[in-house]
Image (cartoon, rainbow, N blue to C red; front, side, top):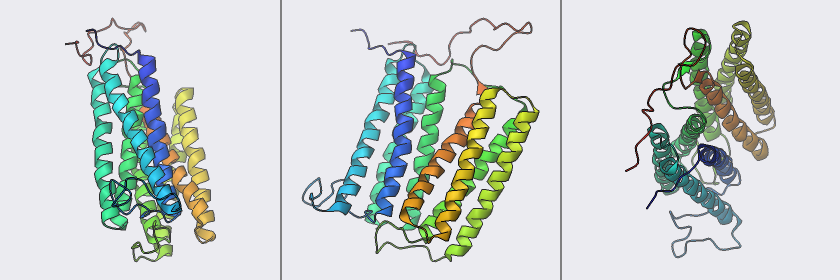
Length: 314
């Protein structure tokens, strides 16, 4: 029997679906916590000890159960990414590897999600759950990017100094994310009224988080100046512009929520903004590289070399 064949454009749409759903599950997970529904389903993987689904009259249980169903949808799309990488024509080992990375991440999320329930929403487990979600989103963005480019090694398309500040942006936005999770784990929205919180002063951890945000904004402005000065293409300029726009909006939301006693709606918007900011920084960094045949000295493309990333069908 001939194996199924999937066109590269179709596979890239599957990868895009994974990006969208993995970003969406971060926001729905935040909704669970902000509505106090973190222990709406006290058992794992079923909702109740005696039944898989919750009672229809229990709002908190329904919210948590819907979030788990979205997680199931994510799992389906991740499986589609793996199968699609095997059916894609031509088949590429790099796409298979990155899609398997999604499988490993979703499995780790399921295990960590069980620990979150078992240990009654203790902050370290909830923080780890969020950070791992961002790692999964990074994996999906790389898969989506590679699915739309030719195989072969990556080549830097900008001045090396832009790559250096881009790496610094990745480090700084990671610090912003981690300090932000500490603020959230110290604040009032723990997912349940009896959930443990960190014993830090909210003003102290918010100040540390704010400092990291200011450092990130300064570095973003420096990157924008370097991109303009070193004559990068419009795509690079647009991506760093998007990073700056999201960062400014995110900073504004953060200060507004802090000055208004951290209302749940603004916290949810802040989580969505953090997800968008992380994705924008990762996408900016990925856009600094190109793949495919390198140009020759006369400006034409070199002849195609054998595709080392392609697996021959069995």
